[in-house]
Image 1 (cartoon, rainbow, N blue to C red):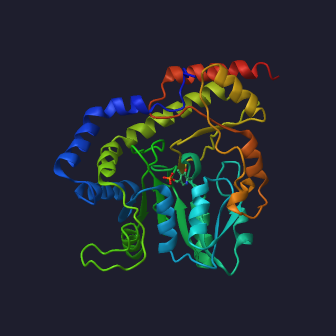
Image 2 (cartoon, rainbow, N blue to C red):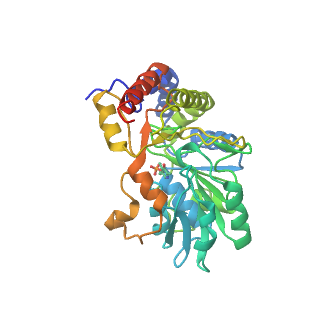
Image 3 (tube, rainbow, N blue to C red):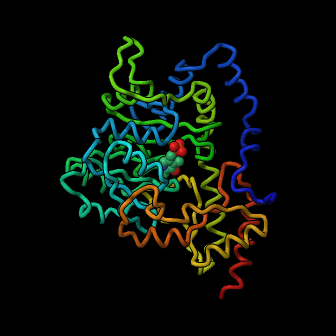
Length: 370
Ligand SMILES: *Cc1c(COP(=O)(O)O)cnc(C)c1O
């Protein structure tokens, strides 16, 4: 069906920047700049500056960013990595593919790692902490870094949803050993296919990721240092991302305005919990605007009828997907999130009219639930 309020609108996103994006692509094609050329290096430099780190390494997905960052931090067979139960599956698969055991802990009311649960999950095999800055909000990164320091653990930040989000003015992905980003088309900075990057201040980790993404080869000497993978960020993709990166601050400001409109329109609804956790030190970027309600499925069906498109991240706990072979964690908050969360339309193209329409639908739905 055609939605009056689409969840995202990739066509109008492209239309806004068409001349610049087309120029960037045509330049690559006309000059034969297809693999590992200056466009990739330019984008990496700009991304590193944006995040506030020394190095950024472009790879072909957020998953590969996580996988290489974990390998770069020395995670391997026999190790455990502590992450959250409420995340995208790629976070956990990256740990498994290193030969390590994922240890899933629960999240708190802001959907992010409950830091009070970390210490009791640490064992002699724990090698790293992998917090996820979900929905565009930085975790309690100070406490995570302090615990990691005390126990000698690496911190790898899954910042796939949080490019530009800050904590005490420091960007997500700039404080751990490495930060991992995704440029999947519907992330705040999205390509025309999947892409990703690792950000770090650690020259060893940056070099290892640079080699791993390109079959383990040092392109200067021709020496193969590892059994790597074919996982370089495409040069054309990098050229497009470099154009879009210049607009990111503007887009983030727009998302914050949309979030504020939702907040004003919806805060009177008792049966709805909104994703606002005011705290001056954190600035969220609202990758997703996720509300919570016990009548989620009914609300979602109603919004669909009204032409408002929503998504649910995620309706089924990861460990219930039997093929993943995960242990069942104690994660009551994650379980209720699976039943209650609903992501409302939110993107750089979401208009005030669309928010008004969505808000009106939510109000009319809940007027029937005293
Ligand atoms: C999108 C995402 C990833 C993976 O990114 P891909 O580019 O799709 O591989 C990892 N973690 C989180 C939290 C994500 O949202």
